[in-house]
Length: 150
Image (cartoon, rainbow, N blue to C red):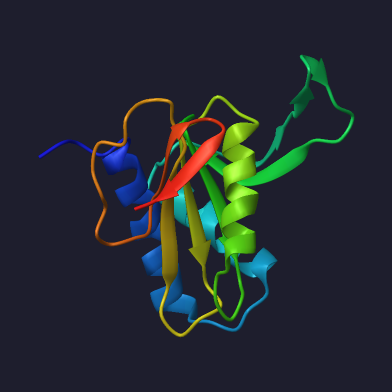
């Protein structure tokens, strides 16, 4: 069986999110979960940058407008938090665009707004998709300009 990209790193982030959801439940605003996640990641000694500013380029020119990822953990994984009734393709598209704008290949989209924690592992890579994570929906991208749902 092929290995998933950054499997252990994603597992660690999702574990932290599960602890927060177990402790706080659902119904709080997103900033509450962001602060809880910062505490939980630090307590678990997971390397992270909170509110990481990331640049967007067009024709090799840096745009004035960038975006802010909720977290980048391990220097490799974008973590985007939401507190919604349910995740939609809109939130997935947001994270895919974050990956397109960076040199990173893996992101985790986490929703604290539902009774059960909802999370999706999203991969954008020029490498062949190596495996399917049965615990989440992966968007495998075989080129940076097309996407395939697995």
